[in-house]
Amino acid sequence: MAPLFRASAALGEALAGDRTLGREDRTVLGTVSVFIIALAVFAAALPVVVGWIVAFVAGWFGLTTAIRAYLQARRANAEERKAALEDGAQT
Image (cartoon, rainbow, N blue to C red; front, side, top):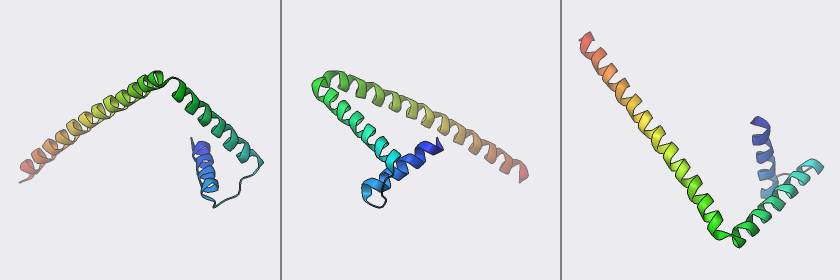
């Protein structure tokens, strides 16, 4: 994961004009741009399919974040109850 993060940071700096790219980085940037253009053409040609994909991904993210929020709230409530019981026992 770290190499991917470093590559994205390097490409971000290059796109912002803060860094020049080496030969390998230019190849990666060119490949990524061709992929993005192909994705744009696909989205323009088949907007219904892309819409369903976006809806699925958004629904998936929404569902997983809702479950995570619920679990975090339960954990926080349990910790608060435990702390309240410990405070009551100490006094």
